[in-house]
Image (cartoon, rainbow over all chains, first blue to last red; front, side):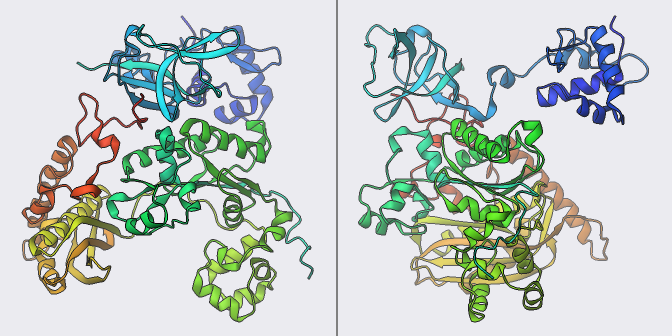
Length: 190
Length: 438
C-alpha cells in the first residue's frame, strides 16, 4: 500500500499536463509554500518512498512507481467510484493511434505497391509530418511532384525506396530523397 | 532630433511576437500536394475571384480579388482551386496549438495570424527570445508543411511591423533601441491601425513616415488624436500598451452570411431562396452562441457588382429564421429587379444580444417564443446528428436543391470528393488529408 501524499498528486497533475517534472520553484507554487527548503524536504520524502527519482544534476524524474499511484479524485469519504478508477488508465482510439496531433495527416492509399505490407488500396493511413524516419520505416516521399508510399531502405550510405510488391522496382532518387512524413498507423473500416 | 537617436534605450521589456502565415490558403494547398509546389496557385475558384495567391502567382502579377478571367489573361498557367475552408481551419487550429506549446498567452488574430507573449520565458524554455521565435517557426514549417513569417518586438504594433518586414519565412527582430531604424523606412499608413483617413490628416501636418509620427511631442499627439492612435504612438515609442486578448471568441458584434452562386440568376424565387438560406445560416450561428439580433441588413449583388441593401428592425430580438423571413419578404421585393442578373446575396444580423425569454407580456408573446425555442432547439439537434440543412425552411428550397455553383466553378475541394468509408459529404474526419499518392 502506498501512502497518499496530497502534494504528490499535484506533481502528477503537473506531469500529466506538461509532460515533464516540475522544478523546485514550480513545486513551491503548486503546493502554495513560500520556501524551497520545504520543497526539498518533501522531495526527499518522495524519493525515500521511491515515488520519484533525481538525476545526476539533482533534477527530478518520475520513477516507475510515480504513475502507479491511483488518481482517485477528491473524494474524502466512502469508496471511490470503481468505474472511474478502472478506466483512468485507458485511452481513446485517437490517443492510441495519434502521438503528435498537430503533425498527423491522413492519406488514402491508391494502387497495390504496398500490398505485401498489408496496405491495400483505399486504406486510411495516418502519417506524421516532420519526424525523422527510422531505417525500414514506411514513409511518404516526394517523387516527381507526387507523394509515394514506400519502404525507406538503406544500402551503404544511399537511401532508396522499395515497394512491398515484386511487380515494382526500387526507386533510387537522382537528386536527394525528400521524405515528408512517416507512416504511424493503417486503418481499414469494413 | 537626429534620425539616429533611438526612441527608447531598452531592448525587450516585453517580448511580443506576431506570426503571420505566408499566403496561407495557397500554402495549405501546396503543403497538401507537392504537384502545386513552385507553381502559381490561387484559391477562391468558387467565388470567381482570387482569395489567396501563392508567391509564384504574385510574381506573375496576380493580385488579391482579381477576377478569374483576368487572371487567366496575365497568367495562363495558373492553377485555380476551390477554397477548402475545412482544411484551412483544421490547419489554423494546429497553428495555434503549436504556438501554445511555448506560451499560453496567445491572441488568435485571424485564421492565419496570432500574437504571442513570450515575456520571461527564456529561463523555462532555456532559450533567448530570438531562439524561441525561430523554434516556433521551425515547428510550424516542419509539422504543417507551410511557412510563417515572425516578428519579435517589445509590443504588438512593432511586432506587426517586424513580421511584415521580410516575407515569406522571415524572422525579423526589432529590439526597442532599434525601432527608429525600421520606422524611418516606413510610410505612416503601413502601421497597423493607421488607415487612409488618419494618413491624410497626418500628411496635412507634413508627417509622411512612421518615424516622423513617433517623434511627435506626446502632448501634441494627445491633443490631436483619440485614444487608439495615441496608443499606437506610444507603442511606436517602444512602450507596451496594447495587451493581448487571449480569451476565446465568445460573442460577436454581428453575424454575416454572404454567398455567391453560379450561374447568376434573375429568377425571383431562386434568388430569394438563396437569401433565405443565408438567413438560416446566420441564425444557426446566432443560436450556437445564444445570441439574438435586433436588426438585419439584407443585400443583393448584381452580375456587374452593384450592391443594393435594406435594413429592417425587429420588434424584439430573434434568432428564428421563420420570423425573420416574414418581415424581410417585402424588403426583398423592393430590392429585386427582375431585369437584372444577380450573383450574390447576403444577410447581416446586427445589434446582437444574449438570447433570453424572461420578459412576460400581455399578448402571449412569451408562450410563442417558448414554442419556437423548442422547435429550433429540435432543428439544431437534428442538424448535429444528420448534418446542416437536413431540415430547412420552404423558402430556401431552391437554394438547397442544387449545389451552390453549377459548371466548372462548382468543383468541390478534393477533400469533399475523396471520402473514406464511413465518411459522408456532411461529416468527415477532423484531420487534414494529403493529396493521393501515386
